[in-house]
Image (tube, rainbow, N blue to C red):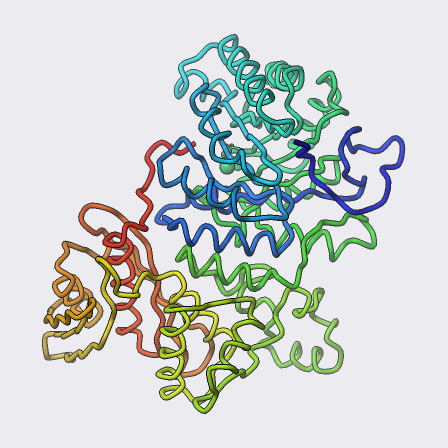
Length: 539
Ligand code: KIV
Ligand code: ZN
């Protein structure tokens, strides 16, 4: 099966940096998205399989070339997620990460073998500190492992990526030897990760120039970079690498990932687009899907986007000072280098009100790129009606938040899971907070009271009692979906349920209710068996 990335575009001109034998045009940058792998490694993120599929489908719609779907050897949940994406998501290549261990490579292939375009991505640490302290391996052992694992992967597929973890802190001669072994044994993409975000643009380019000049066969492979943001330089380093001739960048939506995160997809794509007249690079990304993808990842991961975040932050296109506002009113480009519509921010259009019917509702969801049916649609429509009673007008953002919560939740009250029926809270500065909640399951209906440090704590304790589980709130975050005092609050929680840590979301115009719903959604993930256990051995 051919697994090279299909590109539209012009023929590769002679003498360019693009490897012979790939279909990639010289000016085309391959976008490798690792939101579901490196992004999911950010503390507190634990996506259920259905959530991973939802994100992967949106990434394919966004037009990324490669989706790194996970690390199948890490846990059965990871394997299941990668396999489901490989089997169901079309249009992008699907990559699975694996260490160089033989059983890891086998497991990666097993998970992705049904993909339209499967890619095995194997890696090993190469820096002295990682070799000595983490792997306890000699250089010779690392070289042998690289050669063996890449050859094993290449026997499965003709699309094999090799990464030298902590490449930027590796002795240059040894890095050249490792990459040479990978190319000789069949790697088709060579990735140079700045694993700890240590590099600076000029030094990074020097490393890239050196390895690309010295590795025999360098012109036959795709060169890639994977930058972390510990010094806030991930985007700058990735752009410098592209200008130096690298043609694959590894990125995450909203820049999520280990520690300070990875290079932000939206920043790279919009920087290349904004500077296209001088740099001349293109990507396959449909930029109008950027805002929607950002919102989806933020909602499902529970990582809200900082207001001043480049491209997708709430303030990225707001103008506060009078001088700026005046300028933008006269001519938008006085203070805006990008058009908000180009990233899919058409503004918060009012879409529906309390008199809107089911057809209009389904239509509005379709416009937002969401299709719900069956019980999920019934639940979401009922919630919409309830919300429309409390809030005069509903925007795209409100609908999106509601539908994402309902489609991602297992609150259909079937089997083991519970549905939220109502909540009452009481308390004040001089009164102890108290909450009563009613949950339903089939014919069963249970009410329970809870007390706590505050109303939210009391409501969550009442939910845990009614559901009959031992559950504790670990982390809590609230964001307003839209401006205004009747804004829909979007609450993300991390909850420990029966010893298992899960994240979930809930939305409502009432923050206490949104919190109770989020808490219940987390409990339901564990009761319904859709939670993914946290891994301890991630790279
Ligand atoms: O940061 C890193 O080095 C990685 C590799 C596994 C590519 O995530
Ligand atoms: Zn990484």
